[in-house]
Image 1 (cartoon, helix red, strand yellow):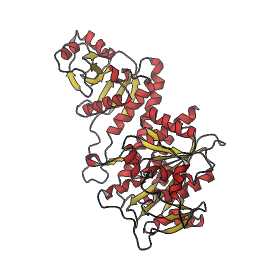
Image 2 (cartoon, rainbow, N blue to C red):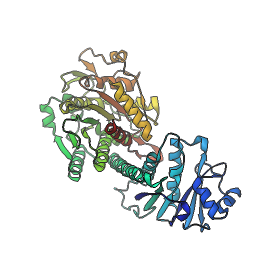
Image 3 (cartoon, rainbow, N blue to C red):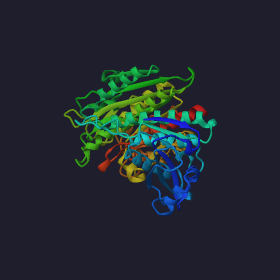
Image 4 (tube, rainbow, N blue to C red):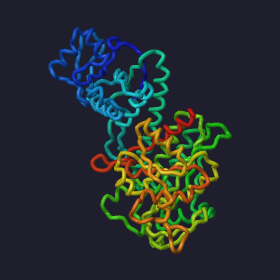
Length: 497
């Protein structure tokens, strides 16, 4: 889908579909009032008759509106002005997307960017239009024998900006929105693939393919023999029961200053999690293919950054493996030695994400990072605590956490801070090793982060638990692409610092 921005009066736009906002109660936007004037009250007559009262989600197509050059006018209900906020604006765009897919118009000109959202400028609104419409057009039919017709729906959308001075701002917003959506698309594709296809080797091959697409990417793949030489006993304990070899993937994007320390993103890449010997219940176990969504979000974020050609240094580290109950799988009670030298008593093999992340977090030290952010579908406890609205954020550096919270608010990919207090560390005590890999039923998300914190003392670190946000279940089951928007916005914000 192609996006552009333009400044001009609505009645002068020659288009297949002119999009106008209507708020409650039956109130035309400024663009709507201009159309109403040239049409001799045509729109106000329609509204007065009750066909459109402006409720959020209402849409109404009008054909051959007098005084316009448009084939049709689409009225979009926006609700009450006092309720117009970021969340409702995205809902408005969702309804717009559905309406456009039901019309034969291949292009449209939208004045929904004129809606006043408190604290949000034209850049935010244009970018949100692009992201919402592209993400709503996403579909996954890679493995279906009958493919969806790619020609269906809109091909071009023009968005109005207040003046010609805003054209450059709008064009930059389009570039960002398209790149973030492209990254989310890659993340969703990888997440939605079944585990018999999306193996650790497949992820490694995907990284190599990404490296061939973007010249500023350097790809390195560590095999199990390499990890053994680095004493990554914790990571390898998870792959022990699987015939699929583990991989440790690093993706370096170097477009910033040579002396600029990189932001390092570490993504959990368990391509299928049976729980190992601590076997999971069978119900919804198919969804454990999504246990690599942290890794997928690193792929997506780096793709978005590379497409925008941002002047930054970013490293992606992806530890990836299956967690299977094979004959030589790690058993509850086994003790392994991590790359850091710390010994770990594995009391539950289903707490495997932290076991692969801890070695990857130690490996991250070699890049002399500015920040390290790990992203993982780590704990079901996170869903109990926060539901599926925000991701959880925990870390050892308050400014980093505050920046992530701010970036999440900016792009509507929210996170919520949980504490990392020393009192929780006691739950990880082991009688036989330096640390246990679980801390009991209480505060499961926090104790998982406490475990990871033992391996992050040499740099500023934040942990994102995306167990509740990386995918949706039920009839609309599938990967969401989160937190690619959050991570990309965070890196964009680093440039402006």
